[in-house]
Image (tube, rainbow, N blue to C red; front, side):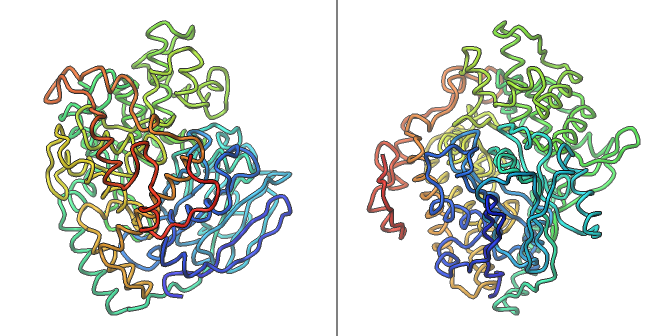
Amino acid sequence: MNGYAEKILHVDLARERAEEKPFPEEWRRTYIGGRGLGVRILMDMVDPGIDPLGPENVLVFATGPVAGSGFPMGSRYDVVTKSPLTGTMTSANSGGKFGTSMKRAGYDAIVIRGRAERPVYILLDSGHAEIRDASVLQGMTTDETTRALQEDVDDPGLSVACIGPAGERIVRFAGIINETSRAAGRGGVGAVMGSKNVKAVAARGSGRITVADRDRFLALKTALAEKIRENAISGGGLPRFGTAVLVKIINESYILPTRNFQSGHFPAAEKVSGELMTDTILTAKAGCQGCIIRCGREVVIEGREMAGPEYETIWAFGPDCGIDDLVAISEANVLANDLGLDTISTGATIACAMELSERGYIDEEIRFGDAEQMLDLVRRIGYREGIGDELAEGSFRFARRYGHPELSMSVKRQELPAYDPRGLQGHGLAYATSVRGGDHVYGYLVAPEVLGSPEKLDPYSNVGKAEWVKTFQDLTAFIDSSGSCLFTSFPLGAADYGATVSAVTGYRIDAGEVLRIGERIWNMQRIFNMRAGCTREDDTLPPRLLKEPLTEGAPKGRVWEREPLLDEYYSIRGWDREGRPTPERLSDLGIELEAPPLP
C-alpha cells in the first residue's frame, strides 16, 4: 500500500510472542498513522484508570505515511502511552531515521504490552521480528546501548531507539533516545519502556516505500521544498543558528523564563545564545533523515565532539537555573541524552529545587547559577541517587512533598517549556489545555504571537486566540500523524499537508479534512484523559503565572488571563462548560464512544 507497510506488530512480552496484524484501512483514513494511530490503539487497548507503570499499560511506536517517502523532513515517529508523569495519554515525537527504518523493516507500528521477565530488546529485521535477551545491556547509557547492538548484529547502520539508566530506574520523565541524540523525550515514555523491561527497539530493512501519484508527489516535493527554503524561519534562522536562535528573540520579548519563572528576562542571554554557539563551539550542522533545514548542531568541547543543545535544553539548564555557562549546558545535554532524560523536565525540576532551597523549604543547599552542581544533579536524577531519587519524581511531586506544589512550574504535572505565558495569552491557553500536560509543540502559538508566522498577532490580546489555539492544536495532531516535522509548519499550511498525504496514499484529503482528522485525534486524547480523572480544574497554569505579574519590559504588569479564554475555547471545540466533548460534536467527528461514558 502506498505510504504504508500495512502491518502492525503486536508484542506480548509476558508470552514472548510477536504477532503481525493488518493496519485497518479505516484507521488509515481516519487517523492517518503516527500519533493518530497510537491514540486509536491506546483507546482500544488501555483502561484509562490503570497504573501507567503496570503491565496493563501499552507502549506504541508508530510512524506515518510521509515518513521515508522522500518528502523533505519526513522521518518522524511517535511513542504513545499513558504517562507516568501526568496520568494523561501522551505522545512523544522524535526524528532521526528510526521512523523510516521501522517502516522499511516492514511495520507502521509496534504495540508493546505486558512485562518481560528479564531485560529484552526487540529486533525488527526485514519483515521479521525477534525478542532477544538484553541482560548484558543493563546499566549501559543510550550511546553504549546503540553501539553494542550495532556490533551485535554487525550493522553500523542499525537504527536503535533505547532507554538509558534513567528509564531502567523508572525516572518519571525518562525519555527514549534514537540515533544517540534524537529524543522521544516528554511524558516519561522511557519510564514505561523500563517498566516493561524493554531496553531497546532496533530496526533495519530494505522495504520499498511507494507513493500513489509519483508525478504529483515529485512536483509537490520540489515546490514545497522551495517554500521551506524561502521562509525566513525555516530557511533562515533555523539553518543558520539552530533552534537556539530563539534565545535572544524570546529574551528580548521579556518572556524567557528565568530562575524557575521568577522573571521573564535573563541578563546574560547572549552567553548562551545560538549566535555565541555558532561563533565558538559549533563544528557542523546536523539534521534528521531527509532534512533540508538541518537545525541540529554538532559542537566540540575540550577536543570532544558531541551533539549541541537545542533551545529548550539551553533554557532548561541555563536561564531557568540561572546559569550562563554554554559549555556546562552542552555537557548537561550530552549527559541527559546518555542517561535517557527529558532535558526540559530535568532542568525545570532542578530549577524548582533551587527555588525551594532559596526559600528555605528544603535542607539541601541547591543554588541558582551553580553549573557544577546542576551537572551533578542531572547525574543523580538519572541514577536516582540521594536527593536525585526524589527529584526523579518530577517537580510537582517533589514540591508537594515539601509542602509547596505551587512552586512547580507545570501543567498536569508536566514541566512547562521555555516561554512565559504571562506575555503570550494564546500560548498560555495552549499550555493550559494541552492534552499531554505542560507542552509547547502541541500548539505553538509562539509562531504568530512572537515570530509573526503565518501572521503577526498581538501577544497581549485575547481576541480570537481560542480559535487560533484550536487550529494549531488540530493541525499539529495531523502533522504528527503524517510523519512530517513540525518545523515545516512555518511555511506550509493545511492544504499543503493534505496534498502531500494525498499524493503519497491516494486518499483525497483537503485542508478541511486535515483539520477534521486532527480534531478527531485531539478529542480522543481528551476523552481518555477525562476518563482518567482530568477535569476543567486541570486546564490551568501555576498560581505564579495567574497572580504574579511580570516586572520588566513590554509585558510588565501582565499575568495570564484564564477567563473568559477557557470558556471560549470550550465553546469553539463544541465541549460543554466542564470541558467534556458533547455527543453532538463526537458524532460530527465520527467518534463512537463505548462504555464507560464521560464522567
